[in-house]
Picture 1 (cartoon, one colour):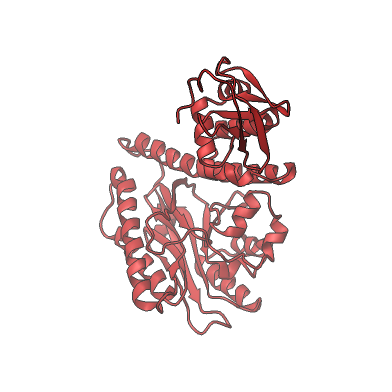
Picture 2 (cartoon, rainbow, N blue to C red):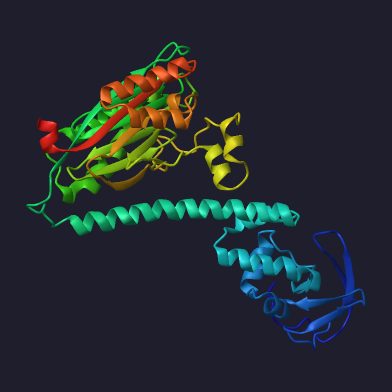
Length: 406
């Protein structure tokens, strides 16, 4: 029944029940307006929907919706007229809903906060905002990619610019425990890639991903077509992974692959990343992880639920939140990486980073001159640490073309 209007000319006593089971018995007063308070049987002063809307800074329309969703049910609903009445004690919860909506929190997530105490609710808000910031960061990377790509679209290399090139090496190893190798690694003149398959069809999945990306090495790729070429190739790679996994994996066994790849454009590297394989940059003595793990444990660290130290030994540290598995909604991160002569890049599967300390990885990457020697030393380090998983490494150095030619 409609919210507005009058109950009739006669006053009479009725009762209704709240969501908590309490019964309010009171007198309908048709002479009162929508925005006025009403005394119900002397038990409690309730607010009409209009008065409650003004006090809570929520519109009557929003209050009706929140009632329908079970998010903010009124203290009393007249069984005859359908009028909603709210208690003063509900104002704090209503104002919190208003603030959370201003944050952009979905109604379903707000409903999960119902019944939580202050610290628990604060933790949920912190977790929600961490996810918002991660999403904004991903979109910021894409915006930066587009701005950089479009700003360079019609530019040409200045005659005084020194042309750059890369020299590279790749190595993959089954390790000391696994019977088969589900990793795949590739390094070529334009493409660097590491993929770590999982599930019964993980090996074919990782191979399918890299084989599809290798098509980007065929022929010249105009800078203006870079973004579209990457998008189309990644879509094909996702389909190829889904098909390979479906044909190789046992029934009901989910399979797919991580993928961390870099496409050389001649002056930049286009970075593609999904899953928990990683890319690192060694530059001017600093060693930086330039990818973000798409794992449950990393999301818990981002949300402040656990520390980085706790994450290292968490039983679910290998559980992926995103991967190539034939699911179009799982989109890789894509961005452009500016390069300098002297840069060194490491791409690796978690078979390295899960067993070899970061400090040792850095020392090896910084202290070994040749990419081939570096990948061999890194794989050996994983094996000396027990080699519990497949391990793959790609190392690439950015050099001046004249240096490469010599």
